[in-house]
Structures are given as structure tokens and as C-alpha cells.
Image (cartoon, rainbow, N blue to C red; front, top):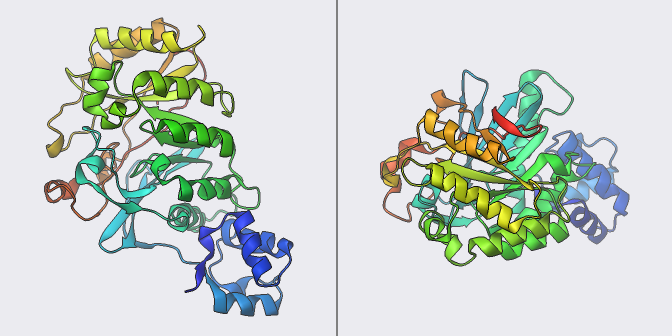
Length: 382
């Protein structure tokens, strides 16, 4: 079977080229052609020796993902549905803003964590994506956007692993994908501009800090173990004390001096003033007295299987005010892509039904995600 070169970071590609009897610098040339120029045919790689191109034709391929649907919002958001075979599909979303272009990427087809407020979790888990399937989302989006916008410079400045799946449960594929994103011969993204979002896989947070520290976002959603056990079942394995200590430890390696805590606002469940005060007490207990984290409050996007409702705007504002009065940055995520159902927590794609509810929510399989932009203490809307 031909090797898919999207599966390799630069070091992996160098090893592949050495097996072909080629010098390592050829891997750098090849890597640039694939990721910087978006080439998919070896014959187009004009500075590679003809003998190498012939070897590559018989041993390798550059295989992206088939796009089955594309939707464009009036606000500029673009959503793609990618076919990953065997009836499974994943989605990626591009969110343009004045000062950045952000791509939200999936790491799994489905998700095994099963958070109550996320339709992906309700639908169940199908399989992990390969490194090539993770990178293929960025590879396609970057180069198709360049063609669409008539640009030669980079369009995507930020990548967030916040799509379908729990990235840290697919660590073996995630790590080389992150290294490709960061490599100057690849996409050249800053560690500060690549974010991994996790529901709290504590041992892998530590590994990420050692192997490839990028920005970290943690799906918190509750200030107590009793409540988080109900909303995020993974908490029963890795309770809050362990999770927050892992976050504190991660700061030793992180490219930013804070961790982002994501908090989905659920009416009557986790949105009362008492919850906000408990949240302040929680992070102060595990910190060193300084504001070592920031909060991203996310309006809940309802779907039938969740049996939950989103908090009102006034309630979210009051909750955020308690956090900011305590000296923490709190952002309220702004809704984007409403007209194409690009809603946060509703990324479900077309994976095989593992739970029996997927058919009932098939029309709501999408994602809205806008990363918070924060500059200092205070309440901001993004």
C-alpha cells in the first residue's frame, strides 16, 4: 500500500526518504511542496530530482479527504464535511476575523467522553483519525482558501483542536499533526496560536507539556466534582483536584501564562451565582494567588437529545461579572455561522449511530466556534 505523506511530520518524512536512499534535505523540499505549496502531484515538484519523483510515484501518495458538503455563512464562516470512509465523516470550520483566520479541526469520528451537552458525545465513538486525516483538514482548508481569496500568503493563523473528538485520546496521531502545524517548513504556526482542547485526560496533559507544549483549553463546565461527574463523565476518572493540578503543572511548559477554561452555560444547572463563586474558590485554591487561568463562557446550543436549555444573556453576564470582579478574565463566546448551523457542541458529522439518538439529531451536526481574544482582566464579548 502506498504511504500517505500527510501522515508524516518532517522527521517522519526524513526517515521515509532515507529508506528510499535519499538524503534528508530532500524531505524538507518535499515537506515544503506538500504543506507550503499544497502540491498533491509529484510531477509538479520541479526542484526534486526526476529519479526521486519516480520513486515517490511507486511508493507514496498525497491523499487528502473528500469533501462531501461545504456551507458558507453570511458572516464568512465556512464549514466542510469530510468523508473518512466506512460511513463516517468529520467536520472542520473556518472562522475569519479581522486579525486572524481560525480553523477548528476534528481528531476523532465521534467521541467516547459523552458530555451531556455535546451532540458528538451523544452520538458515540466510531474511530480515531490518522495523522494524515487530521492534517488533511488543514491542508485542504489552507490551500482552498488561498485559491478562493486569491492569496499566496497564509490564510489560517490559528488552529484549535476543538472539533469532533477528544484530542488527547488520540495522542499518537495528534502529536505528529501538531508538529507539522508548528514546523517552519510546514505551516509555521506559533505555539501560542495552536490550541488543544481537552475534557481532562490528565496523564496526557502532562505528556503534551513535555512533547509539544501548545496553548491548552480545558472543558471545565462545573465547579464541583458532583456536578462535573454528571456533565463530563471523564471527571469520575480524573476529578477536579487532579485536573487542576495537571493544568498548574502544564504552565511550566506552556507558551502562554494561562490555561483557558471552557464553561458551557446551562440554565439552572451550572449558571447560578453560587456556581460562579464556587468556581472562583476552586481556581484560587489550586493557584498561587495570581489569575493563572481565563474563562470562556459558551452559550449552549440546544439539540433534542440533551434535554438541556441555555442560560439567558442576562444570566451569563451576571455570571461573568462575578468572575471578573474576582480578578479573572471572562469572555463570552459570540455566536457565528448561525445560518449554516455551525454551533459549538453540535459537531457530530455523519458517524455511524452508536447510541440510537443520532438519527434524531442528524440535521444538527455542525459546529460554531470562535476562539476568545483576550488582552487583560475584564469582561469581553468576542
